[in-house]
Length: 551
Ligand code: MSP
Image 1: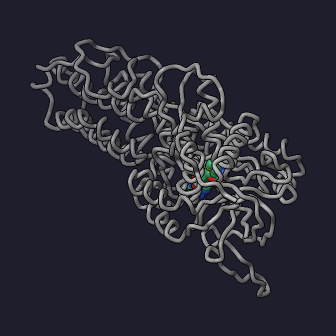
Image 2: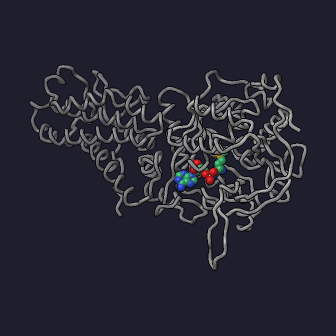
Image 3: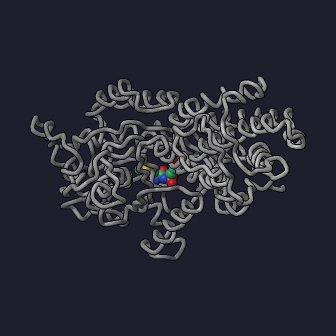
């Protein structure tokens, strides 16, 4: 029997800290809290996983530069049948197997400068505590019930599916195989005792919340949610545990050790684990629930925009403020995935292109909006034409002794600009005035590729300006010294501002560029033309920005 959520339960709305009963001793302003999904450890990370993490990392870097302390959480999702089976295939016990693959994720993230503030593993004791308390809260509010459950279970997606979510596929010898319509993965019939959660109770509130708070973006992903919610009925229940006999690797259901908590309830709770833990001890940053933005791929939208808010509503906790959804990387038109066996190993690409090279390639593509085919040649073209040529050559030209004899960034002079700056140069200066706010508006919406496009356009214009002004000839004539300084001022400002704005995309490369230009202040609001009347000496380190990749 369910108890309806009583008035006293509704009044329970309290910060998460009270759910977890820990003391708070925290620095003042809460950080901008960004999360990645936590990654299954059934196999090594592939390019698609890294992509999710990079989108989130670039946001965290951008927010910090813009003056809002940010906090990025990531981690690994380690329980469930899928992981259990993978450990058995590897001939390892579950714990050792999880340690190994989880470390592959953290070391890949380190290689690619994913600057996470917390890395949570669902096998950690702190996380089991959160899950236990969340479960108890759902139970106390009357939303859980034990009953017998029949249905198709998809191990690859760790989810039960209804008949309408299943297709029948013919395989070798005319044998029929049932698969998930959405992911194409096989399903297994299960009849078992488990706990169910009364998700149907939240249908109306979910519709209302999704419509009113515009939490999911880009907008195009809303239609799949609307249809999923319109198909949901009020009686609908969601299985939230599995018998230990079927899945031994998991967090025990409080008070019923014959059952373990369903992996998605377990996994989603990581966002609470992280905010609580951090509130207390980590990095002296304060993170409070609700999170500012969950970054997720479109395949896990239902879990984040339906299941997760329903659990939170039932537990009387606040709902996430934003959910950013991205599309997928494909190989030959198919989603890159471990189970399809078409994965691209990001570590090999780091060896070839460097961590920042790989970041650039991935963040430069418009995959947020539509699936993108991975093509190595296209990636190499970007690196060579934009990082090596447009940016690298410009830096080389403007800092080389043959052009910039005094090895400095000239001081700004109003008079000199008026007298000697060509129309083309003035146009560049005026686009630099606007550039940081235009790029910010794209970065804020995770549309990094649009921001990078704008930066590259200014850099290309600067290259053509240099080409037309020919500073290598100006420097031969002492009477052209002021004009030469104006040309160098414009070009070096264009480089400085671009370097500042590229920090979220390629942190190491921009760091090198800004070091070469001796730039000390590197915040977002420094990315406007400087009117400094002081000349700035350049560093004497060698400026190779990015080496061309040979095919
Ligand atoms: N463990 C769950 C998430 C739990 S979060 C509470 C999971 N893990 S996953 O390892 O399968 O996927 C993690 C992320 O990688 C998801 O955002 C998913 O969309 C993303 N990607 C997996 N394959 C991808 C591509 N081919 N392309 C882009 N991103 C993809 O789901």
